[in-house]
Amino acid sequence: MKKPIVALLMVIFFSAFNCFNAEEAFDVRKHLSTVSRYGAVKEIANGNFIPSKVPEGCVPTHLNLVARHGTRSPTKKRIRELDNLSLRLEDLIKDARRRNLHLERVPSWLDGWKSPWQGRLKGGELISKGEEELYDLGLKIREKFPSLFDEEYHPNIYTIRATQVPRASASAVAFGMGLFSGNGSLGPGKHRAFSVISESRASDIMLRFHDCCHNYKHFREKQEPAVNKLKEPVLNEITSALIGRYGLNFTRQDISSLWFLCKQEASLLDITNQACSLFGPSEIMLLEWTDDLEAYILKGYGNSLNYRMGLPLLEDVVQSMEQAIQAEEERRPPGSFEKARLRFAHAETIIPFSCLLGLFLDGSEFKKIQKEQPLQLPPKPPQKRTWRGSTLAPFAGNNMLILYSCPAQDKSKSKHFVQVLHNEHPIPMPGCDGSDFCSFEVFKEKIVAPHQKHDYDTVCNPKQEPSSGSIYQMFQWLFSLSKGDKQPRDEF
Image (cartoon, rainbow, N blue to C red; front, side, top):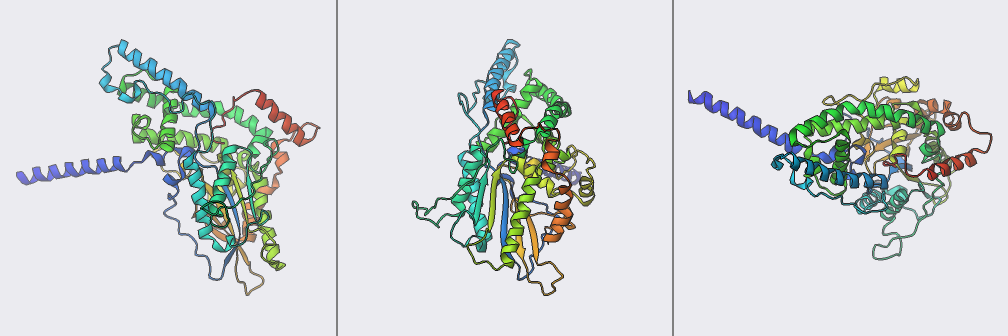
């Protein structure tokens, strides 16, 4: 009789041990959607995908980088929200005491909590962790492609662009400091000065196309209430769960603010035992899904306008590669042509750009977007999905397109190939038959050309005023500034 009892106890023990390990293995910092820090998620890649082996004799001749800014502080609007949350939590605790609620149920940190950003008048700036992310990325890219960065710096050889937003230009500077470290004469690190080009927000259709696209602004304004409606059932469910768990009279807005606080604490401060601990792993994955859903509908494959407006950026990438090929064919001497074009922008830039490349789709979905047919929304947990903001566009998230020149004995065959890396990992492109490495001609024909049926002005401003487009856009931008900080710009 003893043996069955011992066996049963062992089963119970190992089941409990496995559950404990599952809880221990869950790292909230990998589930913060686009608020994820690069170091927490950059090693997450498609484990089923086998990267291409670059053929022997192929050498990289040009590099394009499109990167998001690094980890940054919350924006002014969000700082105000956290200040309001502090007052709200104070009221909830007072209400609980009036109701003689046993406060043992309530996490102690809630009583008297104040926002770490309380009293801040400005926000959204790159923080030291963000600087390190971009600095390290610069070091790693130079190490990975030494032949591309072996020349004396010149702004026409290494072009660096950033949007006219301080956190993006600061990211470009941090990256450049890593990329060119040891190659100058400034300070102990032997740094050197370099140029960062920015265009006015009012006319930057290359990196801030979302800010210049009239139709997109109209679409987003109309769509945001519907997106919030889609998120409501999850927020309602979690609100009810937390009311039952802690006895506090939380509202849906409270849960939304606490989830935002969780993301800020975990990503910026490495604090996971306060706001994040209010939620269980399954609840966090549902909240992450609502953020991913929003990114999908308002920035990604949810509407073709979201990425078609990024065509100027895609065409700039192609143009840079064509110019590199021409320089090679004309046998221009080293130092006379561009070897890298490096860009620093926002989630609203890198997500549409990834969509233009067809990333995170299977072959059938890729064919649908080429025909502008709708796709299904990302499936709700616990179902698996490839569309995850934490891997798609974390802080410092990036896409690299490497142009290779390969030996070609048969002149009818391609000599130039493109490899795409996402967050430094090779990633499959459905337009290249699921490979991360394909001929430049196929890349242009299968991935770029279908988007070129659409012109930026036609997509964004079909009923533009008779006045000059750039002047019209400038007045639109100035008008939006005069209205104050009313639009959500948290991921810029």
